[in-house]
Length: 373
Image 1 (cartoon, rainbow, N blue to C red):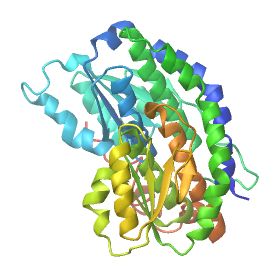
Image 2: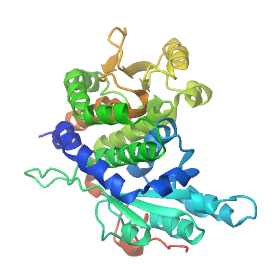
Image 3: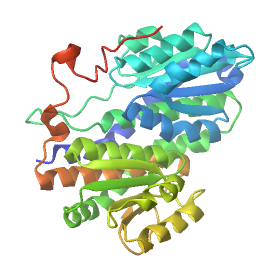
């Protein structure tokens, strides 16, 4: 049984179920005065939560008109927010805010970012699975994103899909709430978000069989590169993470422009390289980079809403670029799910190696790391 694929198939229903409640939650948590006075927003998280921040940064800026910066929790808590102590660096700390994203609510580094930001006068919010999680208790307000995994008969833990989508939808709901409070016409965006469940369903139908075929054709590969720009840079990072989690293969998420400066020089010529493009602001550079990829022998897989692309192509349903992360990641996730099944690999390597009981629960100590207040 392909349990990861089964989770992916539940995503259209999940979106349909949570959009309205999440919009209501955002309205409750984000008051008009705050939204109108907000001058800068920071989005922080680790792993999938960081990728959700990267994927939605553009939505906060383009839909709500709020200058936004998405950072890893470590970068923000240890190297970013401390600058608010420097005279003149942040003249109006009371008009800045941070949203910490943590599905479990127990990731130490994200909690640390919330704690340190709150101490420096920033308004703090937690996007998490429940109001009683540690991060929810640390923040000024909480936006809950309950989206439990669908149980499977074998009790197998699968790579995160539903939790990532729940975080995305909540962040979009926050962007729409801010847009409305700041006097922007958000009705069109709201209608589009309500329609994204259908777009996800269409994308699954478009790409599932093609992703399976691609997985069969690239069984010989040992490394994969996913490239994206703007909001789809977060998508590229997320897709690479799903390959790592599902099949254990080396996978890299990269910015399209940066690929031309870095992976272009990689020794292995035929590395499967996924070029994720919305065919909007990124289109001219994506075309140029695709030409370069093909010229040096990469197995290029274009992931886009185009209907007429030649060569290896995984389609997703057309939608505004700001919402593209909700559909552009589907082909990559399906590819990862099919590859793991074909290789017979257990998800997360069945947690063998790397995370022992030593040092308080594993070398990473994600939830037990030292918290610097």
